[in-house]
Each structure stands twice: as structure tokens, then as C-alpha cells.
Image (cartoon, rainbow, N blue to C red; front, side):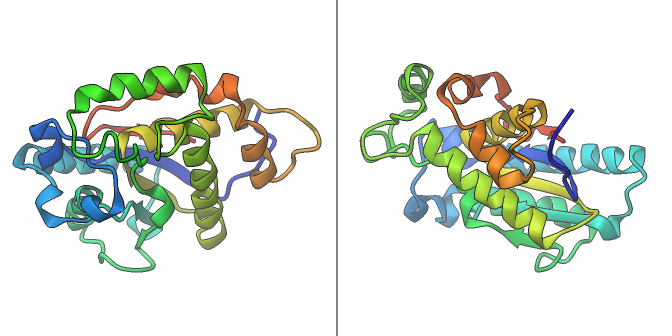
Length: 226
């Protein structure tokens, strides 16, 4: 049983197949990530539309009205594009308060040694993560770095919204890590951790963070979290 009481229900959506995905490139810096040429590929647009259909079914199954839907998304072009496709499906205005860009939902920065190189390099990074999630690639973010900012994004969403169905549109690694800390928080039973911030901080330990790959998502995959 979760020791924290959340004000909202959460779903995560990994962006649809992007042009970098098609080209097999790692695009993780903010500078590159916001470039329009790195938005969704045509297949990714289709994936985003399918995800919107799936989300609609989830809302109907949970009797959640559209008025209570909020979309929070990473500022990268591929996530913004995905969020926009979903918002268009629901005829939701793509601006506050219905849709909100959150900087801390951005892609994990893998550092200059990996930027714009082959996505085959991910296996090297994940091997580091499993051994030491506090280490990270040279010049890039560790799992712990990402977990810390995702906890902040969770605090923002919980403070700004109440009674909403929140769709979090982000990237592979961040959403793996996001799910990792949220699921760990639901199992955390320390009586001293009664608020969300302290609970999310308490679960950011190596044995938990090193297992983030178990929550992997395919491109365009929607998943209920909590």
C-alpha cells in the first residue's frame, strides 16, 4: 500500500517513432532535441494516433471526462509532436492548462561521447547503469540525475493539477526511470516518509535505480502507471 496519496492518475507515453529512431541516432542534447528535423517519422505519427485511441479507451473504462485530461510533455520536438497528435485527437487546446511542457521530462543526456552516434551504443550505457546508476556516461546524466529531476516534475504535476488523468509524454530512459521510482514509492512503507517528495527521494538508491530497464517501453507505447 502506498504511503503517499496522489491527487491524480498517471499514464506514460513514449514518443512515436522519430526520425532519429529511423536513422539509428542518439539525439539527447537539448540543442539537438528541439530541432524540427528530429520530430516524428510518418510511422511515429501513426503510433501516436494509435496511442491516442488507446488512451481514449482507458479514459472511458475509468469514467474520466475529457475536461479532466492533462498532457505534460518533454520539450524535444519528437515528444512535442507526439503530444500534439494526441491533443488533436481529443480536440484539446495545445496550451495551458490542458497541455504543459515540463523541462524536467526531457530526454536523458547521454553526453558528448554518444551524441549523434549509433543507438547501438545504448547497450554500453545500460551496462554502466546496472553496475552503478550513480555513475553515468562521461559528460552525461546518470540514472540518479534523471530520477532527481523526474521527481521534481512529479511534484510540479501534483501541485498544479488535482483529480486529473495526466498523460506524461517523454522518452525511453526517462520513462523507465519515472516508472521505477513511482513503483518503488508505492511499496515504500517507512513511516517517516509521509509526503511525495521524501518518499521519491528515499527510493532513489542503487538497488532500485539499477533495474530501470525492466520498465522499457516501445516507441508509441502507452502504459498506466499509478
